[in-house]
Length: 147
Image: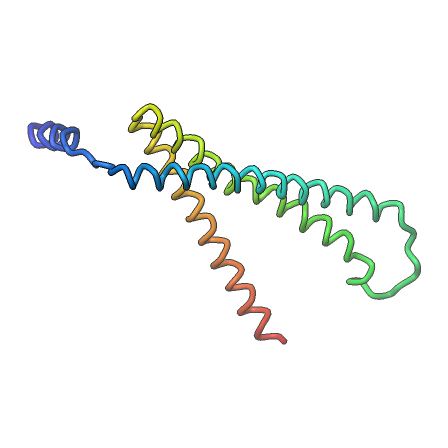
């Protein structure tokens, strides 16, 4: 019990010093993160509504008698693809926005908690991006075998 108390006290006394240069870099990164996240939100919602549009556009289109299943269902596939992609992309842009907003708050108020939330958002953004990259890379490998 005493060791845990001692460790907690040591942890509280340890601090991470941010130089003026580091603070300036976090401030710049926060501004760009906010900008990119807002553009990303617009892009995500555009993809979402494009998916809805493709679904509604194809519902009134008559079947012209084509026997090719892929040709008949390409609009449905595109609709579902864009709809899911639009929803999926909201998360990383939200985490990027979280980094931008809380990074600015942390620097303005010298708030350690806001800095931790900010860095958590950035970390989550990069983890999500890495997972998507791995998945896309795997899909390219799998489909590349069949071409």
